[in-house]
Length: 113
Image (cartoon, rainbow, N blue to C red; front, side, top):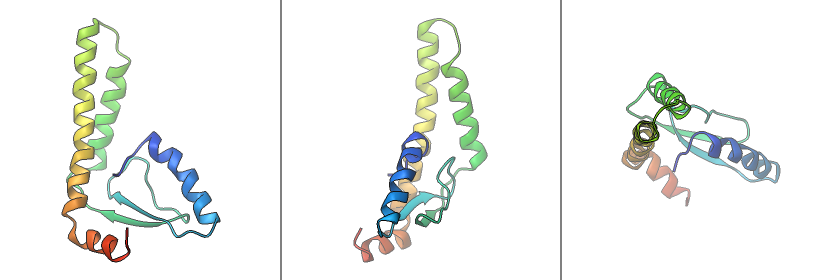
């Protein structure tokens, strides 16, 4: 499951160590990502998604802004919940597009992932 953000930032260290130990590392990621970028530490396999970097960045910025707003608890709760739902939609869409990408799935199957 492609995961951007803190999960990825932690994983980069692990991938570098695996490469240093002689492993071949393949990262499968959406073409639009905030933090997952090509590196010499791994082979990158990307797939298209139906949203832009700007759309995703806008939603993340809005979520961070709402997360630190002041106001009544229930108002803040529902704003944060709605922001999380919109951000989660990016992940769900990304996973759907990965599973629909027959060429990439075939590559993964042929390489025994």
